[in-house]
Image 1 (tube, helix red, strand yellow):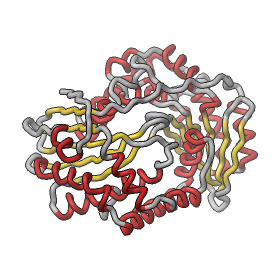
Image 2 (tube, helix red, strand yellow):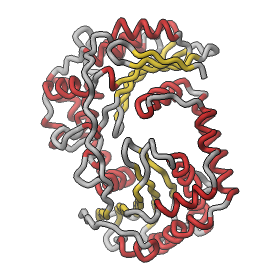
Image 3 (cartoon, rainbow, N blue to C red):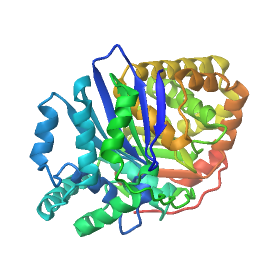
Image 4 (cartoon, rainbow, N blue to C red):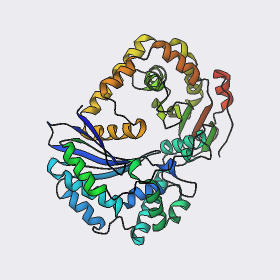
Length: 427
């Protein structure tokens, strides 16, 4: 990695990873604000703002934004997550100045035209409807709402029909002024980019941003519980989770490795036992989500109505036995998977630009692939067993969507794992 970092006078951080053998560059602006930054009344405004950034500025219409970037063969897009929002582009090396200027324009000069706003609200209502009608999307929204009940972290990124339809142009401007601050932003690029020239572009186009400090998010409190939604379906969607760890926890790499061992691929425990050996589901995997001050370890399974009664206890048995039965061979295999994933991501300039930006926002430093791998290699089998014991003894979150009569419950989980839970049934 040829990574360089410069912090501008107003607090904006500029990071680059120069790949001299490429002729293209991936670049973007990453903001340390996502759906978690919203109040209950603002739910969905971060995502709406991301959409509206492309709908016209003081100098460009929505069509002109699209035409200018595509006239040079470039791509422009954006994404909203729980804790971050990013606006990114991919262009030829000679068109980096144009891409930076367009990004600066849409982030600082958006017009938020009322007619464009109304049209985009209806687009998002379609997204909300599609998510509601898709069980394997809905089960995750329901899961997150239960894991962090009545908290910003538990609200859907898309917002609700009521909140989205209520937003005004002034609401968008106020949110932008509160959260899109240079000390909370990283301008990142990877590929055919010169660091000093990129810093000069940043100074030219982003120096007017106010140097005010950003607001800290509301502290999260994992609550757990259960939620069940009855649908006229032939399938059952299940997410079973436990309290996880934040990005900065000393056991972060251990729990990420545990997630890979349990359900990170076709050779994982859950896939082999439940999918391959028993044929009880068509999809099963585990994952660990980290946030600034909390996290969650969870397992998602999708199966038929007739198989859920057998699948659930087998799943719990696998969880219960993990803290004693995971082997060194499984740990070594998980390390190899993670190592390959890191190396494959390094071959994508877009992935590299995103990785170095997020690392800076989260940690205030940028780790090389070798440093990350060294931390993964330092995880011992004893660490895996210990983290499995503590994780699977924590509060449970159970989210299920399925046909009438297929209702799982936390009593079954308690019988297998002995976990204490708070019941918050959502019908």
